[in-house]
Image (cartoon, rainbow, N blue to C red):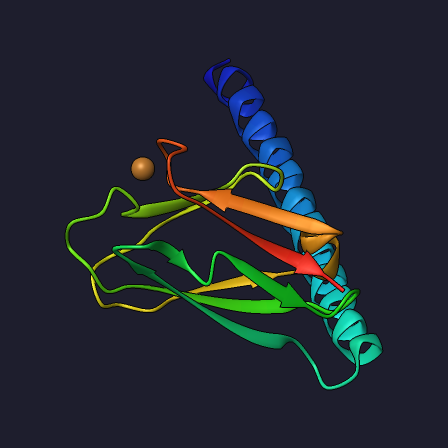
Length: 136
Ligand SMILES: [Cu+2]
């Protein structure tokens, strides 16, 4: 009697484990697909991602406009070098990304070519200081 009662929860637990394993397998496949896609896009761009550097100074994002090559991924480094600025963080609205900008610590931001598109604007979280990447 008690054996029958105990058997049901055990079966259920087994099924949940099966679902977990399935989900983990799906996640693994997704990660591999993303890595393969990333390597593929680097290959097409010619020479891998382009590096751009932006600083946060009293003047805001410097330079305010950065030209990049179209259809190439970008590795952007933003370094805040002033304490008195409202841009202690940066938000990329269109791609739903945001980063804190600690003082004098370069922050590396990886952007796919599709993230950049034609232009990718960014601003501090209060939307007062602006910058943009422009694909040429
Ligand atoms: Cu601000």
